[in-house]
Amino acid sequence: MESRAGSPTQAALARQRAATARRRADRALALVDRYESLAARTADDLYLRLADVHRTTATRHKVAAELLEAHARRTGQWARDGGPQPLFMTGVAEACGTRSVAVTLVDGERNQVAVASSDPSSNTAQDLEFVLGEGPARDAVRDRCAVEAAEAALSTRWPGYGPALRSLGIAQVVAVPLQVPGECIGALAVFDPPPGMTTTTQVAEVADALTRSVLIGQDAVPGLFGGVDYRAVVHQAAGMVAIQLHCQVGDALELVKARAFADGRPIGDVARDIVHGQLKLG
Image (cartoon, rainbow, N blue to C red; front, side, top):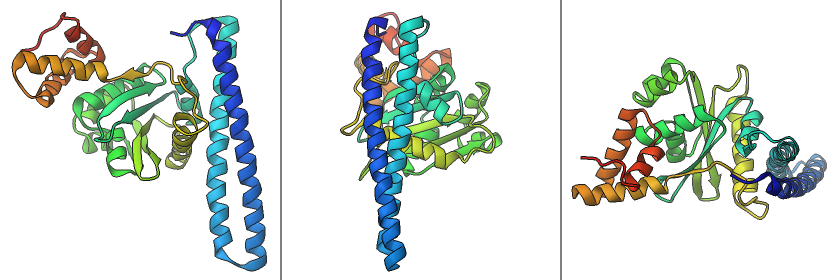
């Protein structure tokens, strides 16, 4: 955990990036006005398409600025008053109108490599998805489109994950891919969004801002996602189990997942026990 002494620097960095994002949003909006005026004078649809492109860019930078400003405020308050260290993902959850969200990052083969969550429920939900091999973030990455399910449809779509999610008291989930041109780097999952919210549109805007302005790109903020759960220790444990049991690493990984599910424990905790020699499988 970062000490409070270091938090003013993080807050200042977030404010600096937010100011930059605001300036970029203002420039994009100025271009929207320019192209809409040209479209009105010339009746050329090309100008309307250009206006739409810059409107999307403006929204991305505006949402990124709001996320960064909120995190700067929380971090500054934490530096003054103490208490639990604020998580950036808490602000992401608020931007989506809920308390529980999680970002899952994947590698080129769609293997889950890291998770950042806003609260224990969303962290457990992503653990379940990783262990069971099914769920909304996985589908959003695979299909590169928004995924949404609620109530009974959760169990219909994901026979293992759905009932487990509902046992956490979660009745609805929306997931959208984190996309850059030609690539998907993960997904944003939102749990129990508020009634009446335009779910996929709002979540997609937050996901776009996270991907293009916070996670990667020239305005990215290194180290901003506190509390990231990296899956490296899980794959290390799978490698050790494969050696011990003389089996394929993929089969060993499924054994680690099965043990975590059977014990009702976070898979990271089970993996660390294996790596530290406190637990043997088989």
